[in-house]
Length: 256
Image (cartoon, rainbow, N blue to C red; front, side):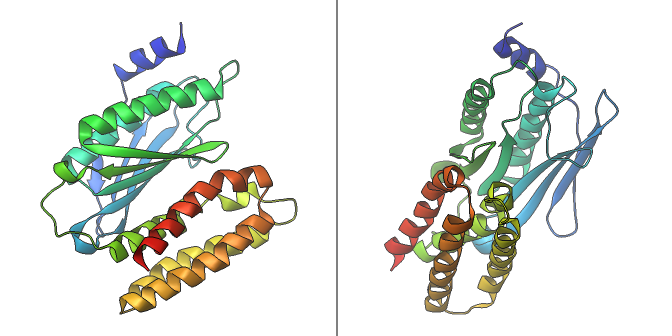
């Protein structure tokens, strides 16, 4: 059976997973798989400024973020897509971000599966009213789903400064999460320190009052993060992160 046929069959019978809302706006769901392991899906509310909710989505299979293995990866992916669809239909967030591993079962081509998953995410996101932005980080693909303006709820216009702040928070708390995995030998702790500082900075940003303070802070953080990434990451992985960094730099330049 071809991979496309396996995917099509899997999408006809995803696992049924129920989501529950937590005290602080997060949503969580869990379902037992046929091999006895559990699949958990977590929608974590990262920001709710101007009522434009931004969620990072995490998928765990028995405590691991690797959803492959046990011959059931495609049915699990179908379950994840179904959960995403139900979530955006109910909550209508402004932005969702999540990772998809490229690890495959023996005999499968990781690039073929990635291309197929990209097509599926784009197809369903379009049906949901979202634009898709992808970033290739080597062994993982990062997806950002942003609600289309003409499909979004009536909201106050977002200023360029706020767009920059929102993008920086996604960059600092989500895009950098796996940085230490791509470290040069012996530089893992250096990159873990960068990740910890970036996560802390996203919270510090909320405390600042004026736009000028926030712009200066983001400028200083970019100047701190980028050289450390270049110095401590393997070259091939740093090159894959560069477009994401440039996107943030371009937003900053557009504001100032």
